[in-house]
Length: 92
Image (cartoon, rainbow, N blue to C red; front, side):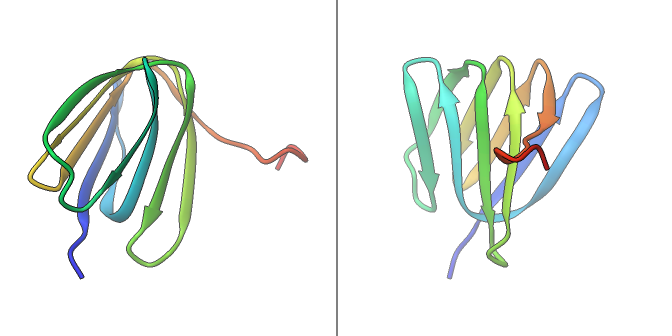
């Protein structure tokens, strides 16, 4: 099965890089989901949760504040103004 190649980058360097099945991001005009074979897109991000389901099935989450997401040929690049690890509702 094909995968997405994902790079998450902030001003101070690379946050995460790897292979994924799904990327979900807070686009300026609504939530966007990226799967393998997605058409090329460039979108502005708003504050919200960025979610990545890795090829191994791990669910990764970050809270991002601004930036952009680019998709081309199953390569997803997310450049954010600021990023922090997301916590669950119990604060973990």
